Picture 1 (cartoon, rainbow, N blue to C red):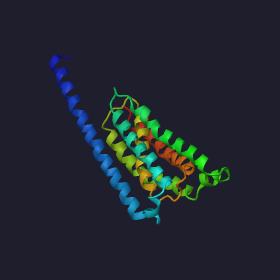
Picture 2: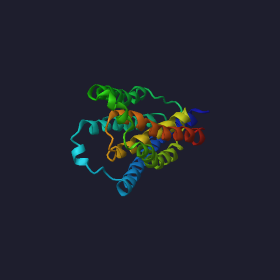
Picture 3: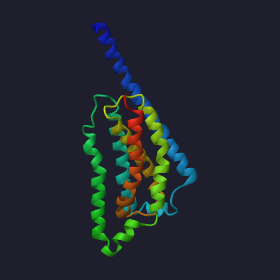
Length: 211
């Protein structure tokens, strides 16, 4: 390779990264719009949303799911090139789990042990296990299509992070409908619903994002 060819290759690489970021940003806007459309036309807020906004347990759900979505999106952006690693995003992805664990410990202290199982099971487990994947599958497909223009070092990880990001977006909307606000319910069912999309994203990454 001549010096001139190397310069052209480096210039092309420098131009490709903003294009990839633009594709991902567009996919995120489209994903969020799709979830919002489905949510507000088919599901909607819980009936007591106004009073729920004044409760700590209801608000705490967003302390968990919003950072999950943000950090998963950041990690997804970070892992689209063949030389990138998670870096600091690896530690940040653990923050929602630590926050949720703290909420569970607080619930153990505040609630009698006789109620722990009841709160963990809740009354919306089926909705949680179906609505979050249903809301998130469209965004996951949109993100995978955008990620196909990248060249991730770890295609499975990149796809799994797309699934995690889609789950975070879907869970943020679903949390406004869910009547089960206990951290015990959240730690039991939200991760299970999230794992569905993460698993699909991982397989899709291996299938469509490998190079």
